[in-house]
Image 1: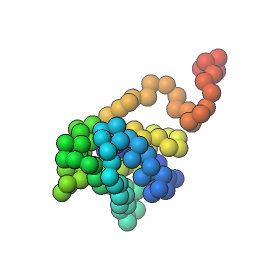
Image 2: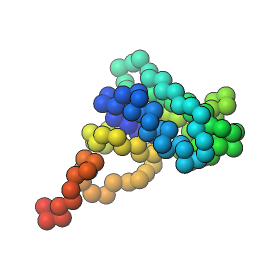
Image 3: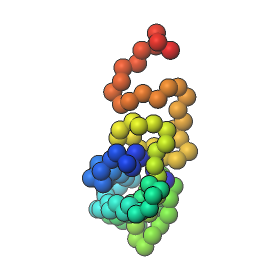
Length: 111
């Protein structure tokens, strides 16, 4: 599962972030985003890779399931913060300090 701010990010932004994350496992051939039409934000992505071995690497690396010949990745609403553009795998990394927006300067004197 990957966590996103589903209400703030467009499908194109999520597509780009998933593509970038999955290319670490091999050649990505396609990413399709499917949103649930319910009051509870949620979605899933189907990721097609160049080979079955690469699909298995995506599943192992992200922790979701095989659906046909694709990796099915559940996308869930990120309730941690409103930080834009953050992709966080379920189970970590764990935040130990205050959550700052991307690009925010660290000011140790104020903590």
